[in-house]
Amino acid sequence: MDYLSVMSIRVDHRKDSAPRMQEILTQNGDIIVGRLGIHDPDEVNHGLITLNLRSDMGRINNMMDQLSGLEGIKVNHMQA
Image 1 (cartoon, one colour):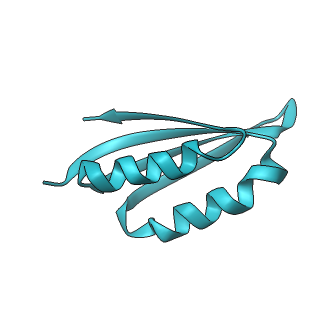
Image 2 (spheres, rainbow, N blue to C red):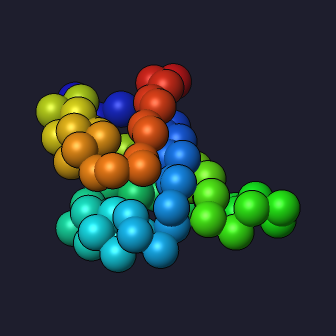
């Protein structure tokens, strides 16, 4: 069963973490319904990405595990 949910990704040290994080997001692009990214204007090395997702929990958990394994990345997920 597919779920509509929201994932937030806090990115510290954007220059180091962003390329691999972007690869993971691209690999999972078919489950991303919407994406909003902002950076902290006072600290250019930090950012926040909000994703709207539609997928089964196995696929979402897999993406969360991949992202959480990256240094400087913190992931939260909320199911609607």
